Length: 243
Image (cartoon, rainbow, N blue to C red; front, side, top):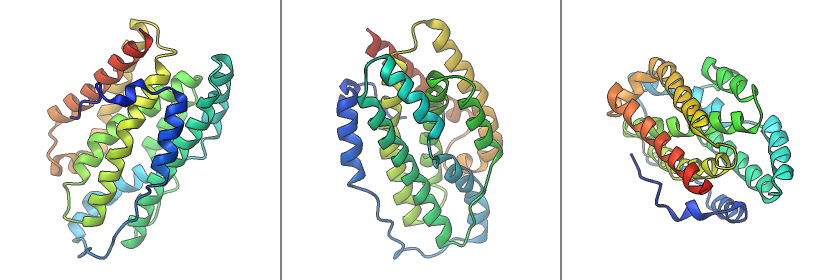
């Protein structure tokens, strides 16, 4: 688990987040397939069901999200947040594109829908921005452990490049979302709900993709400990921003 509580990004306001996202957009990953030696059928069966699910989950037009973002931005007089979130959505779609390109290379089709993605999207729309961000940041924390495990499941250089890029991008995403939650989480009840939501999310993800985690060096104990550890850091940051 990586400690992000001392990162200088924890001092960013939305203007600085805009600058970060725009700078990061100029350094998009160019996936190198020249060193690929192919995957075995066993490896394909291991990794591609989860890659298909995460590829679907990373992509979105962000229409409902941007609607509630604009409400928040005008309420709190933080208009820079609108562009920062647009840049965030763009970056998430790049993630989806990376995974799609990898799937295309191996002739694996995208899925129109997955059960977990449908659940996440429905949950995000149950409330306003707080609900959206809570679900998003939970997914991003789980993505950290997933891409870390996925990178160890094969010797594919291209997949390792993609996973490294995902980890590079998702860590700032957690700080970015935590900064927004600091404007809305005002007490122990909100934070307790986040713990319950993370706990409720961990089980179905483990059931669906535990083989990837196990091959990547995560047993159930480590999987829970590290995801809860990232949540603890996020909650700490929301309190720090709020103070």
